[in-house]
Length: 210
Image (spheres, one colour):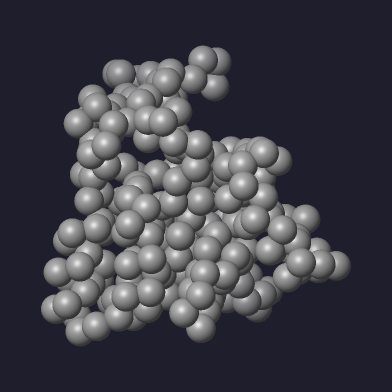
């Protein structure tokens, strides 16, 4: 599971600056620009993302979580292993996105207590999680593009913390996830190769007093 993640839009990192510049130009003067969250990002908040348009990467603002029928609760994650089997996700399989992050948070249960951890790939200042998005109607008839983050089995280093983790894409897999098309059989084969637990080293730091 991934219930919160972190992206500091003020960070002096070229990829982050490029994303922020793109959405700032695209939504100049729009109130939605002020809603884009920087820092620790929670479900139902608006976040910077990357979609594909005309076979190019395009920065976009998406809301985290697909609303259930009551439009109050949201689905924030999708199991990578079953996205082609579940109608909710298979119907939007062409709406793939990249969710930029600098880390994510997970909680380790210890009896009645929970300990918060900040988790990220080693030697990495920004990475992309695999996501799916869909245009949805919120209360009041407002239409927004909302996303879920794909999850997979945890990396070996964090199995003691949680039994799931977000799908972190390798650099060479980012465009495959975003652009590749094909039959369900071909996509299933591709996804089994790229939507996998992170294997290149991961670190978890205990978050105090939170």
